Amino acid sequence: MTHATSGPPQHHDPSFSAGDLPVAPLSVAAVQAEPVPGDVAGNAVLAARLVERAARAGARLVVLPELFLPAYHPPALRDDPAGTDVAADDRQVVSDPRLDPLRAVARDREAVVLVGAAVRQPDGRRTCSALVVDRSGRVAAGYAKQHLWGPDENALFSPGERGATLLVDGWRFGLGVCYDGCFPEHGRAAAMGGAHGYLCPSGYLVGSEHRRDLYYPARALDNTMYVVFANAVGGAAPWRFNGGAAVYDPEGRPLGRAGDDGEAVVVARLDPVELRRVRDAHRMLADRRAYQGGVRLLLTG
Image 1: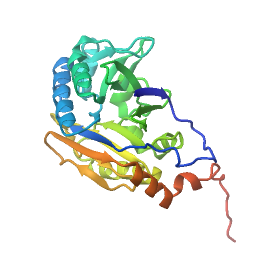
Image 2 (image 1 turned 180 degrees about the vertical axis):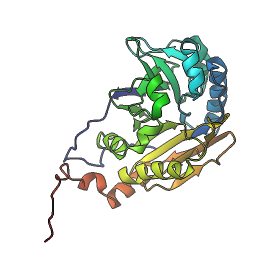
Image 3 (image 1 turned 90 degrees about the vertical axis):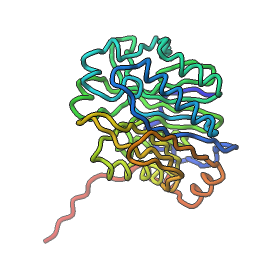
Image 4 (image 1 turned 45 degrees about the vertical axis):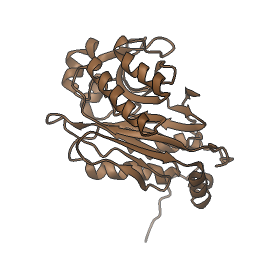
């Protein structure tokens, strides 16, 4: 069963417990590939091929990069909004026929897919979103990026207003998109809302490797949860992307990681026994104080 729910609470629950854990392992995939700017139909075919590859390797949940369907290419997004957007209805369902290859592979392979898209909302807003394709082939705009990065994104998109949690086979996943993962409180809100993992479709440019390789292991260790990081590769300067797709365990260790270039599918197994072990040993979530205190000025004479 898969569904999206309203976002994780933004306050600390002092009764937090690691007791509500999945009962069975789950195999997931983090994908990196190079989409074609502006070609939603062609990129959906590419995404379907990658999902098929991941499913053949055992993945039940597949995460593809940020804005993968139109490609992360601000000039194309700016010049052709009608061609690069997909439309969501009042229930956040996306019915665009260009996504039929993804619907088909999700049904045939019984896989859940998370893929980046530019979404036109019913009120006219445009969001940088993560679409959820469930095992019936239904496509929904599951989460809209809350933290927009730089002048291009802020000119193109409206920020999302709430978080989201995705439920897959008893595993709860907080959703983030790229820059969201640079904010410790975003991942923490997901964890305090009960997430066992954090899914981050992303678009990191060449030159950002140091930050890319720090943020997501840190979110894993900060919150003793699994992190699945997908990223684009290739592209023409200045929109060249650096791969590094990875799955991190709850202590921030890579269970699998791709290189900085080239198409790749990283498959890893999420283990509830390991999640329990880490949360018993590292109790940051349970021991966190809701109120950290204000500023106290200390004077010296």
